[in-house]
Length: 173
Image 1 (cartoon, helix red, strand yellow):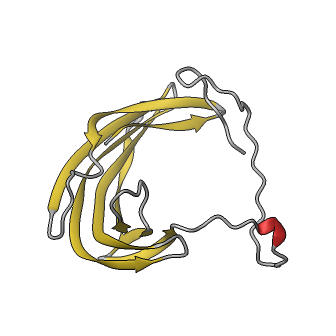
Image 2 (spheres, helix red, strand yellow):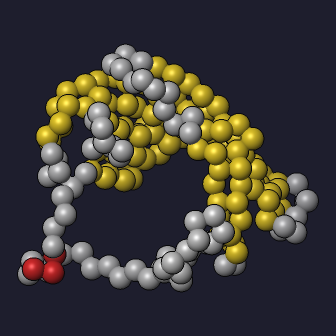
């Protein structure tokens, strides 16, 4: 269950708490399970804008079987999630505009794993699913020992490496 979201605006964190929490899953999940939940939240950027998001989430457990990734070969269920929402933006009190969103995710979930073994997500436009992201569980590879022009290169930094859990905001770059 998601209880809130947050954004960073001009370097300042702005939290938003759901008026109606987003229930991601309703456990237990078994083949042929189907559920639908609603959510809504409001984000206020003082003196500038207000964003209101309302919508619903539909989970359909439509398959099961074995999936193989570099991480492991495991038994999974497949959950198809459709998140249909509408974002409304009111700019400085001068009326606003809204636009619909329809996101679909195909997730392969395994017992005992916190994250999907495979997740394919994207937008639904005019009834057609357009995948935009694929993520799967992988194993750790020490890429420093691999000589490859295709090895990923990343460098992250954080403005606070010893945060206080209930009071500090950490910005990653």
